[in-house]
Length: 459
Image (tube, rainbow, N blue to C red):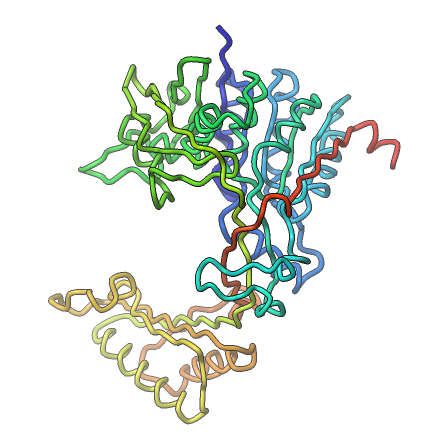
């Protein structure tokens, strides 16, 4: 019986590098999938590019991930799928081909899936924001990015073209895994049962080590052995059975509990998990421990037809944030922090500071639970006061740093300043994240194949 093994290479751009290499060398995997996004990833990248034309339009960690594993993947027949393309997957693919040439790789085919970025036309589609129902056209001047979650179709075409690597911009994270399974088993993406099966497998794997003990450990309640050496998970799939596991001899744990937590991760309605290619009913999923770090995933009629729309994430300019840290230590640290808060409040009145929002936290004292923090404790020996504001303009936001810097000689005794490492980091633009539903017909995907020989000829 045919068996396909899928490896989770990463859960986001800055995830650990080592587990992917371990999976290639010891995991007997057929596919390695790198998730390189969070919800705000592309909006932040777009904002950074507006301020600095030299910022890469793709995941800057992509070269660090590809270079150490590329030769081994090709030798072992491991195909790579990743959404590291961000705003320009073509540029990302060209970088991969450049790395391949440097490594002396004789042949490489890379598929590029584009079409998700619709920043230039989102305001012209007559759509409204999900969050408040307002027309996107009314915020036209604030839009800095708009990307649609594409499905598995473009990735599948890249695999069918025989490509070793497929690079996309935004897609549903789990679609990378669904596409691999659809290709291997000949599944139709229009079959809700099979599409749901692939999406659920992908959803379990997409967050990497969260399935094998990451974000699970709660010492004394949920213990994870050797957590410093977590392995990323593997899904072993046949036509009639799904097993999730990890590399033997590594840290972490794969259990029914880790699977249940990941299954419900970032899910609002488990009975209607809206995916680009299907609506999945996660209540139809059960788990069975069948060995050490081996869990069988049982999926029973979990799919319904896909919706007529796709979700788009829209980044909006929402002003600027300024953030400062002031440090206090020794006896009376809390009292001096409170005095400093009073000083700043009064001085803000004098300069007519007009922020949209402002907050002050005594970090380690009330920053997490805020007003619910109990007051029945002795004064702390150290206090860090964090003060942050949101303002419409960079000039208004800059007023915070001016007043905080002046505390060096105008504040209480024993005050310290949390210095920044470089200029320009104390004020940054805010990217507000909104969403909309876009008719599928408005977002066609495109697949382009680049080859190493083509890159050499162009050079």
